[in-house]
Length: 271
Image 1: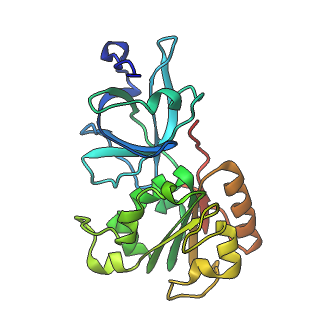
Image 2: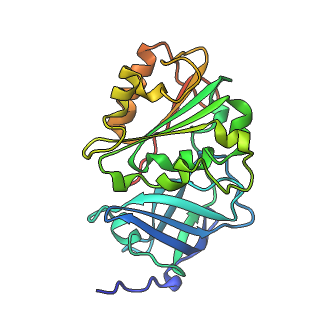
């Protein structure tokens, strides 16, 4: 059944929101999709930040949720990765968007999954589950990140192989990226892992940390070193809580924009 076209007349720009246009939609699975929208010339963000996006609610007021920007900061369009929640107030409708549809975009990106919130280090581990990969897709394509770390390690845990969004791009070590040097791409390490299907790497991220598989491709120590390693966490609330506790037990301290540390988490979630 065809979904109704989103009526641009329902949208109202404000001091906090602009109205943008969907330029691209790709459905990875029945429960996961990527979309892009136009980017205002005045929109600036740090790689890893999130922003509010949404649609008009039933009461006419904007219905907004926080989404991490998945595109690098130099891209002309803004890219996002989303789950599909059939009874979710926003995602139940957002999953049906098409190219040309209008969408709300907040004007003030923010967040703690940024390099500013981390102390200098040698390796950057980005641990994600599900759509938590989104901010790391921005960071891993940022040339400045490679100027700060010797290795950039992207870890993505999902249930099924098909949910490994951006897998081909990451397996190619970001081939064709216009700003990354070959030496940067060579220092990017991709560690996908699957929990409910056969795959070359299986198990939860914590299992990979404990048995050392997380570090197999690294030229550095085969375990976490608080003095040298920096970690970013993005995923479910339970995942973040568990990994934060594990890192603290290993001697890591949490950082923020005002006080950089050895690991950072993001507290905004899509629903």
